[in-house]
Image 1 (cartoon, rainbow, N blue to C red):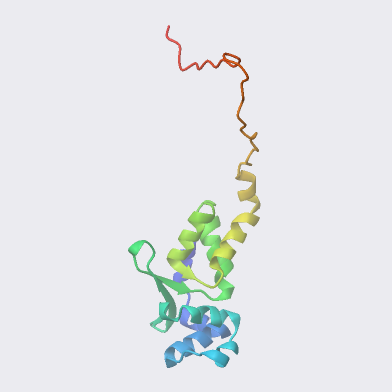
Image 2 (cartoon, rainbow, N blue to C red):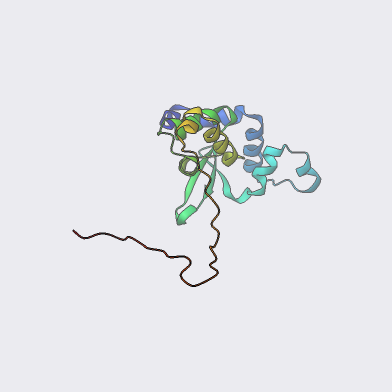
Length: 163
């Protein structure tokens, strides 16, 4: 599962990812690009800079802090090469729980731009999940029945029969 991530040197892994290294560098220097300077940054860096105040360094590792349900959560900003492994851990390894549960589990631990899109793709493209999912049967449209004279339509409801 995702607990195997504990042995990873996250500071090194984040610095090996050029876009994450750029964000870490900006955070360390306290410099927030604006205007034309911001346009020079990659879409990944621009996405992170939109929520600049939520990001911080903890022991040299980049985290995003959010407060869902009133509880503060530090989400590890995950390098791209670990996205698939993380999704496997929060979806496949815990019993294919579905989109909402998988997304909740991922958000309790990790962050990367487009996390929700990646979770949705993972759940929707897994063959096992699609085979297990029961198809929705189309139902007939309900239409009113109009009567033209009294007692033309008689309805009887059977609630239960006593013996």
